[in-house]
Amino acid sequence: MAKMLYFGRLSDLTGFVEETLDLPDHIQTAGDLRHWLDLRFEGDGTLLEPTVRIAINSELCFDSSAISDTDEIALLPPVGGG
Amino acid sequence: MLTVSDAPIDAAELLETFETTVASAGAIVTFSGNVRGQSDAGRVHALNLQDYSPMTQTGIAAAMDDANRNWPLLGLSVAHRTGRILAGETIVFVAAASAHRRAAFEAADFLMDYLKTKAVFWKKEETETGAVWIEPRAQDYEDAQRWRAKETTE
Image (cartoon, rainbow over all chains, first blue to last red; front, side, top):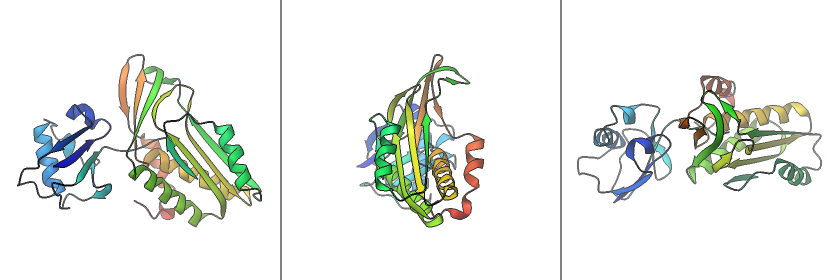
């Protein structure tokens, strides 16, 4: 089971901050996941925005990065504090 | 010194502690960022700050390393608050110490630009008209561009 985290405004889209998920077999990369989640949550492209980054086990990754069913995967909209 | 916590920030106390660690510094610059009471959406009740540990801390620590590499500093202190922060309360405190003032001013400015645009936080503003997620303004990104050559982190 992958642990999914949706930060900032993305939690308004998904309806929750955190979930555990059995990733379908065809989801092999962060890019696959992004497209699948956007359809699943009817994001209408929100999760495809290049400013939405993905972190695997707390490391920023590329869409080509491989993901596995045991990862902690975070979807991060643009950040900023202060 | 770096703290990310939902506990209230007391800037005067942090400065006092910091001063004891940099007794030989000729210059200490501090910055406090407070929750504004007013925004375009109306009167602000509070900000809610979300972080993602350990990415948040790791990123700020790397920016502090960049500051130490780029300026001759004698010490740095960063405190950032998370959770629900009421209007008028302090969100962020930065202090930089050096032998002379320019390095301390620039390092504090550099760190604040990092914190505003690159630190791993998300902000939701509660106003009298509702709650809305706030992302950095174009001006914040422009400010951060000034330091591109001094950063080793993304």
